[in-house]
Amino acid sequence: MATSITANFGGGNYMVAFDEDDIFTTYTASGDTVNNWLSLIYRIHRRRLDRLIVGLDVEWRPSFTRGVPRGPVALLQICVGRRCLVFQILRADYIPDALHDFLEDDRFTFVGVGIHGDVGKLRHEYGLEVRSWQDLRLFPTEKLEKPALESAGLQTLVWEVMEVWPEKPHHVRVSDWDAPRLTGEQLKYACADAFMSFEVGRRLYDDDY
Image (cartoon, one colour):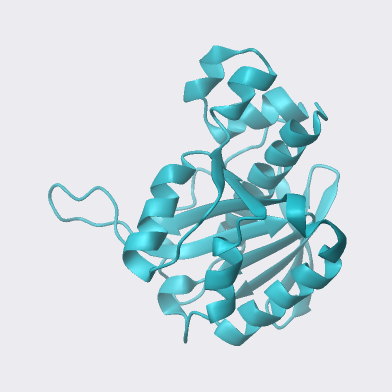
């Protein structure tokens, strides 16, 4: 199942198609744009903020220093419902207080595969504290009664929960995540990972699988 960009609205706003879902995606390095995106999320979901599931993922600039497997986080992806934020945090003009507040809000549950490492890097490198999070590899072992999923990747979890096998674009190089401008392939990849994390988490929490 391939991901595609179906519309470019300008100003860093795109429509990304994943299976039967259309994801309105905002791509930016602007703190003001992040502020506006978060304000919109609060307005859209104001009636159920106390049980909001948020997909979270990061991409990093690789480090070639011996003994250091990964460089700093270059990209932060957040997905709520059918809206995704792709934030070039390494190139941001500033990191807004609203982002700190959003990540620290314990009404929200942030979900992802290997999210513990992502949370640690965000804290260490940017002082961003994710208060409430859940690794998607652990949750399904109880819900689906499949202990083997504890070591599964995101693709496998998407197949188990959504019955969709996402194709990963092998030619997207992680060394390019700190580029001044992401390619279309990178944007699709970044958006899809955040959306898949959100949707798997939502379905597991809602028993919709």
